[in-house]
Amino acid sequence: MSAPAAPISVLIVDDDALVRAGLSMILGGAPDIALAGEAADGDEVPAMVARHRPDIVLMDIRMPRLDGLEATERLRAAPRPPEVVILTTFHADAQVLRALRAGAAGFLLKDTPPGDLVEAIRRVAAGEPILSPIVTRQLIDHVADPWAGDRRSRARELLDRLSEREREVALAVGRGGSNAEIGAELFMSVATVKAHVSRVLTKLELNNRVQIALTVHDAGHV
Image (tube, rainbow, N blue to C red):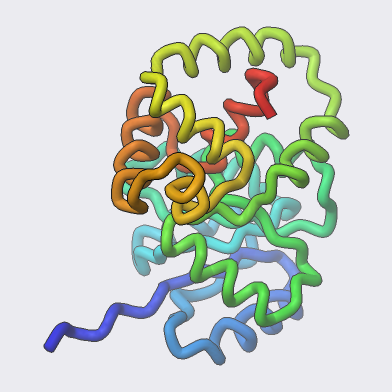
């Protein structure tokens, strides 16, 4: 008989004590989620992560001393980082887009319904992003970026590294497909899709599926 799976460990980072309390109450009620602790500012995160080794960090984007963007960049640059989910009140926000490019697995609005919040944590723990292609497109369209042309050239160069099949999988990820949906579309098993996604991440030197999707968008393919 196999041992039960360990609960998903989550660290909550927000400067609003009421927000932290609400998130703790919601997540604490899920049997497969364990709270690793709370932090009131981004500068507390490295020590908390080192002490508790959470699987996922729920990160507020705006905090007084060290904001969520800088904290996310520092975390994702460290060895074996936890997944980071950005908490925000806006869909289109330059800081959210920058956090996603730094390696965040997605973002949640602070008024996300409790059931959706819990399900989003489970999806991130399973390796799935929580960011739809429509929201990605909205972010990119609403944030003025003088380097967009340079990024398009760079993104196309990156995609040229891929084999034809890897490229098909990358484009499907950019369209927001799950592993099962991509497998059905491209006539391959879920295990094969996962293997292709892993190779795409390695070849493009990316951290997660959100960054694959952003690269595909940058290249102009979605």
